[in-house]
Amino acid sequence: MPAHKTVTDPDPLPFELNDTDRQVLAQTDEEFHLQTWEELKQIIANNNLAILKRKPSDLVRYIAWSSQTKAAYGSITNFICQERLHWKPLSSPSPSETGPLFAYKSPVPFENSDDYRILRNDWPYGLTPDITHLVVWLKTTIPVDGATGDLTPESRQGIEDFVEKTFCAGLRQTGGADDRVLWFKNWTQLQSVRGLEHVHVLARNVPEDIIFQWSGDGKPEGLLDGKA
Image 1 (cartoon, helix red, strand yellow):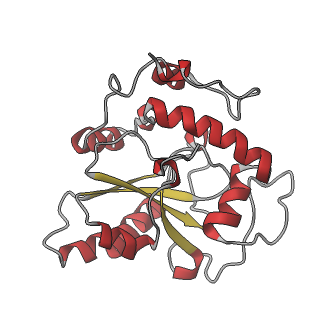
Image 2 (spheres, rainbow, N blue to C red; image 1 turned 30 degrees about the vertical axis):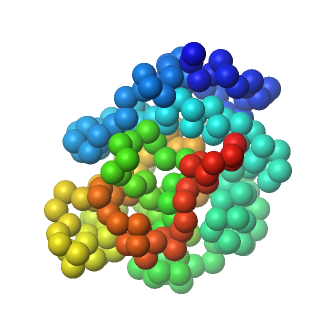
Image 3 (cartoon, one colour; image 1 turned 180 degrees about the vertical axis):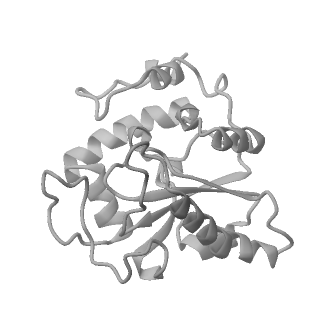
């Protein structure tokens, strides 16, 4: 039976379902294809990020969790700031701003470790079990091209340098970092949490103790038994 048949959708829905969401909800977890490392490399290389999706059962739970969280906190952004990042915004954003503002040590993204935090993705995409999905949250924004919305060359290089220093360099000490770390940044239309700058990092075959060293974070919210 399709996953969406087993759960009553909240009314109203916490976000608009797109065609991909509806296709996923028409499947069972057994029918769903978990994306592999080789597929992810191609998806990211082609910037075809729209096809990344959650498992049917996770999407059902994410819809319910989003509805409950928005009712309790006002928005997913508020929940993440208060409960996951423990960052206090300077003030409420004005209508011309897209999200909360924070005090920061450096205006340059990733330059100061107090200005970012690495966490597991509470609601990861449907990936094979060897892949861990992390998110790097930032207090500062990452510059993008005003015409295309894509990362500028300087921004892309800054993320590459950060990923190399933070993730790959340490893995080399454990026996090699080749082909074990990927990263991507969703454009605005694909972001489920808008207004908080973030970059996705995928790590393959990385032991739990190293994941914990990077994030200090336990099992993802979306994978905890009994959680909505």
